[in-house]
Each structure stands twice: as C-alpha cells, then as structure tokens.
Length: 319
Image (tube, rainbow, N blue to C red; front, side, top):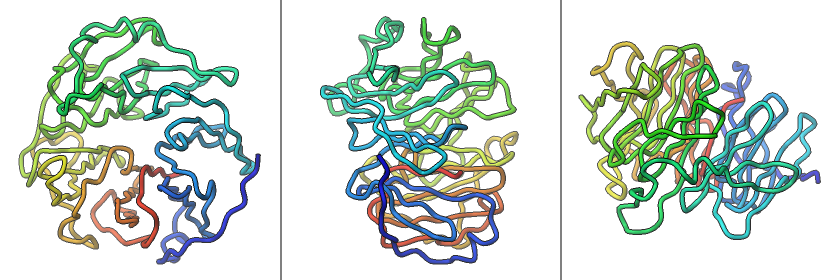
C-alpha cells in the first residue's frame, strides 16, 4: 500500500544540499523525510521506532504494527499485535526482532508475530520492574560484531544472546536503569548504554562495565550514539526534571564529556529520548518533543536547526 503525503515546513535547505545523508524522523503525526524535497509519509500515524536496512526502512507504527518501506518508497504493513505494545525494532539478515511491553521479545515472520522462547526463560526475569510499579518493557535492541544480540529491559539491565536468541545472559546490574543499548560497527566488544547513572561502557561484550558521569550536569541519560570516534549522549536532571542537553567525548577518552553548545539552545525543557539521537559517519542529528531537529556535520562540535514546528519527534535516523 503506497502512501502519498503533503510537504511539511522545514528550513536550512543548504544543509541538505551539502550532505550525502538524509534525516528521517518518526513523529506523533507521521514520518518526516528530509532531503531536497522534505515531506511527510504515513500521515496521521504515530511512528515510534525506525530502523534502516539494506532492503528499505522498518518502522513501528501506532505502537501496534510493523511496517516496511521498500526501495521504491512503498509502505506495507507486515504484522500487527492486538495485546502488546511494540517498543523497538531491529532488522537482521533473515528476520526482524521487536521488543515489546511486558518485556517480551518477538520475531516478525510470515506476517505474524512469534515470541522468542529463550527470552521468556531469561535469567533474572522475575526481578525486572519499573520505578512506578508497572510491567517492564524491552526498550532497545542492538546487534554486535559477531552477531551477538543485546536487549535492554527497562528496568532489567542488558541481556546478551550468543546463539541467535536461543538463550540470554544478564550483563549489567538490573538496577542500572538502562534506557538505550548501542553497539559500534568496526569495534568488536564495544557496547554503550545510556543509563540513569550516566554512560556505561563495555569493551568485552558486556562482561564488565565502566560508568562515567564526570562533567555531566545531570547523570540521567536517555540516548547514546557514536559519530566516528566520538560518543554522543543526551543527559538531564531526571525523568521529569527537564534541563536536557547533548554531550560528546572521544570514544577512547572516558571522563572528558563536553557539552554541545554551538548552534544549540542552552537547555532543552524535555528529555531527548531513546531513539531520537542518530549518527552516520561524521553526521549526527537529534529530535525533540517540541518538534525540532538539529543536525551536525562535524561529530557534534557545531549544530544547525534543520526543522521546526513538526509534531513531537518520537524517533529519528540518518540514511
């Protein structure tokens, strides 16, 4: 099913003319596509998770369905769920994984959603929780250099599978309150996590972790990404406290966070959320709940506003 949609206001077109990467953003009212002809697709739908892949683009729509956009720009709904909220998506070579509410991990196959039994038996599962007393979620997913899988449970730490999801092992303290897990292409063993205690880094596939919050104005981190050899992280004073900012530091130099300031407001009033910070080579971009998108072409040193007055940004990617 192809979806044709109207143009949305955006600015700073000169950025798009000089970049080989395009920013796309899932919003509460559709998918915003940058480039020389910015426009909205899936208009009226809420797009909450995005994942580019060699065969197109995957998205979680309205938190209850998985959609795919083929290279010709046509959208198709692949599968839907009537009892679980879909939280995050990870396309692999032969399947697509989706993290859900109530801390399940499912596989999208042949138009249906199948539970991954090994995740249902994961160690420590009975100890997962949320600070407000509700059921936990699988909040983010990542795949490592050798195909190992990482699943971030909120709250339940980060689990790793070395056998394509057949079994799962806990890698970090359950109470670390992880919001996003991220691996780094070309850096085997490196795993990063945005947590309520700052940035967590592992260089051995999650067997051990180092926490770093030095020079952050607040240790509550929601999103993390890597632009070349630079780590970018979003941090604030807490889940509802606001005063959020983006920080950067060299990947191999922990303890040297630098606040990103050139071209950005001093503070953001709301958290820059999980999935709303993305990188590609030296490019970085993030979106806000105020409907703004900022982009950098120098690994986060300087920034420009790419778009404003959009619907609240729920996820963002660079393709």
